[in-house]
Structure formats: C-alpha cells, structure tokens
Length: 139
Image (cartoon, rainbow, N blue to C red; front, side, top):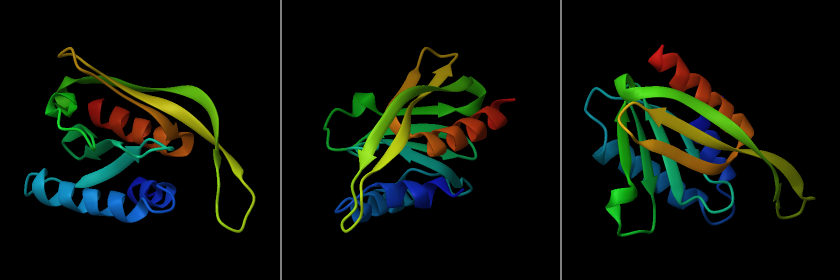
C-alpha cells in the first residue's frame, strides 16, 4: 500500500489538494537531499495532524497553528517503538454513494528522548502500514 497516495485520497472533499500541496512542500523544504519520504498518515476527520516517515526519521506537524513547538522530528536511533490503539469507526461520506464505516486507530511513537508522538483517528489500514515500517526501521 502507498500510504502517501492513500492518505491524500482519504483527505476528503476539498482537502486533497491541500494535503497534496503540503506533502510536496514538506518533501521540498524539510528533507535532506538524500532522504526519501516513504510513509504518511493524517487524522481522518480533519487532516491537520500530519505524520511523515522517511528512510531516516519520523516527523510530526500540526497544520494551521503558529505554535511550532508542537512540531517534532525524531531520528530512528531514538525511536523505541510504534504502537496503534483501536478507536472504533468513523463514517466516510461520499457524494452519490452510501456512507461507509472506516476503522480508525491512534498511532503512538515512543522514543528514548522523552518525546511521544501521537496522532489520533488515522484509518487503521494506514496506521498498521506506518507502524510496520517504523518498527522495521528500529530493529
């Protein structure tokens, strides 16, 4: 699964372009020249919390805030583990079709440097892929 494409598609009506643009800006401005974005997750209902996983680090950004202290960057050497917690389901509404129940989870990245990254209401399928990737990078 390509969680970057899937996350953009899950963003919903009117938000896909915003998430795509933010992802492009992130890749252009935040990554080292030899760094590659491999996973992405965002909140299901309001995609303002963004988790990016590269081949070197985990990034967390909160959109629409001037408080940059909530943004976090953690190298894999400092990551202890990634966990997911079930949060039930949310309704997805699509124009011209019936609503669907989407399983959602909370992603939690624990570190050895006192930083905990949490992002709630992530579609479970995306959360599981991100968890698998993070945990494979730290072993």
